[in-house]
Image (cartoon, rainbow, N blue to C red):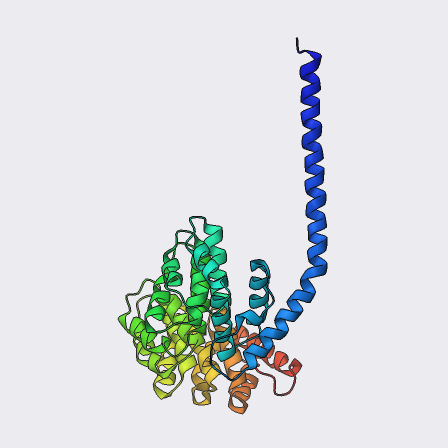
Length: 351
């Protein structure tokens, strides 16, 4: 049987713990309330000082001593808030300030942490503060996909020839999030991308060839034309389809000639893509070839044919009106549908 003395001791201990918990909660709440009042004026003064430093034309060292003595959390908040609205040399200046104020050093330590969430936050800070560090390149191979994604975002902002090549290898990453992020980063990559991408397309054996064709079509360049012409003859219908879209994005006589031949492709998706591309190029000399597809057995091909004829202007509309009374009911139905849709569109509206 438990003695009364032991029971009293247990109750006293629990009461003391409860009292300490209440005091800790009240103290934390009081601290947060004080910070809400104290932080805004301190941040405002620091922002004024930083603004003066950023607009200064001198390239000398930044007088960090002029800044209020802020805790690290406020330094991070101050620099990250400013970095979102800055570009060019002013953003580079933020990187210098982050290094001098110790924020960049802390971010580097976090980026090397054993805990993935710290590595993620460290990579995020380094990217936001425009701080160059080799650790970000190594984080492209991090074991956690969220950390890899953050490094991929940074690589998209700084992609040279080597990083552009590295980003293309990440299109086969096991994580879907990393693959989508790599596509987004490649779409934002600068002039380093076209020569490397053209080489990968010409190779034709890249495991991410289909995705590379989509990226090339979203950022067309004349250097992709030879590869697009070659890939339009691929045995795989999926590759021919994306090559047709790329030809429509690049344009040129060779592209339009090849697209006209693709109108007779065995795959319905390829035929539709070829018609869409000719419409995007407004290549009206192919109107009679495209009009034949109004009788195609695939609805998507008939739709693409009608939209392309509409994009051709007067020659295409003439053929649509002629086919509106076609003996083939599918051709007549699609021609009438496209003409009715055109009447509902505002004048001068794009396809």
